[in-house]
Image (cartoon, rainbow over all chains, first blue to last red; front, side, top):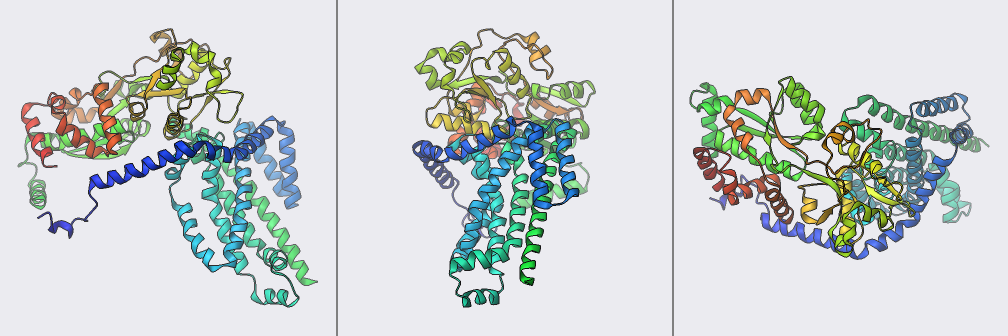
Length: 299
Length: 336
């Protein structure tokens, strides 16, 4: 009877074997974290110092100055009075509702995570665009990064690095970097072949071709990637707070477990406000840089 | 055989409940909240097996957590049973629900109650016994380095939004830990808190923070509860430390937490026999700890653990049910 049941019931691995396998892998990981944990921690300590320093900077600076800098950047990048006013209003409301400090904490970790994503993502995207083999290897990795539930890799990371900012940034970057890599790759691949051939004909070296032709022409797509990265990074704020990252995620977490709906909504809206600010400002910048490029074509 | 039973069940359903016994008629469908920590999930599975095989209830598990499940039981009368509910993490709503005759406390699911407190790893206390007291901790604050601020020391507090966040925050103030250089770290979630303990323990490092027992973590990693040197001040605890508004908290050990089996009033009326079982179903902390260690060693899920318990600890559970029902459960479990 038992031998025939494989048709109706899946012939699964013996439970004892499965448990043995699970224990073996868990044990191996534990040994790894025991022997290399301190080394890994030392490797990431510059990142931790950067994060701590940047958060302290944002928190210690008087709010008026931070606001002025934010508004200044928004205007300088977008040159839009309407947008700048919107940003000012959003941040004034955030401060008025008592969320300034948490917003600064979130802003600091998101900024660092975004910069890190750009620093890692754009080169990876360029490499993918230049070699089909790299593209074929990296794509499944990106799929895993985007779909693997964060806690699956977060808790092992916590065992290695402890709770706090570094595992938080790792989680955010892992989740937020794929769209940037994908879109950088796509943008470069979509650059008109004729234009590239023209560049080669003019004697451009591969590096010149990359920096003066491919990247500028791919810029709108790359900007869209950066945009997505920022959005997704902000979406991870609550997950990050579950491993002890301070910021707007913690009050959200607190309010959902206690059913303080208004508090949850306010903090959620603050996250949305940051997201929209980043989004509109970077889009305005992308649009301006595109216009500038089109102008060059016209010459 | 399975098909035969389901055909029988179908006939029973079509012809009304005339075939099945009175227990089943009263009990029929029962939903049990399966909460996401090991002892609660074990109890939920034990309840499901006993209610299903012993009392012929169509018992099924629904995922849950203290707050959402408790609220749903009050507002919607669903699920019927919460097998392990830490009453002080649901205190006000519980009181109100019982007063309004929507909820009924069947009994204590952990007969010794839950133990909460601030803990340090045992290997630290072995090296320096003074670390078992709060004075010793404060004197050696430098040992407990803050993860992000090297000049400070860290007390790992209770996860965001849990009720213990209130009490651990007040105790942090009452014990004047800030003066000794401590900062309260919010681990964000139970998983984060567990991870911080595992990290410290695997490498023999210092750790100081809030935790509770019986739990797999404290089964696996031996820890010592820090003595505040003041005993339990129940009155002050209830009036101040457990309340969000408490301007002048004074030190007190955590009182034993009452851990209950909660049912809806409707269920208690509808299925008095099954309810009778729930009033008796209780684990001692020693039993629960040994079961949790077994679960951890075997990486067992709730179902496997419940079958293990029913097969190997008959002495315990046969006291919860009448002899004829125990017989039915025993036969059913033997076939699993």
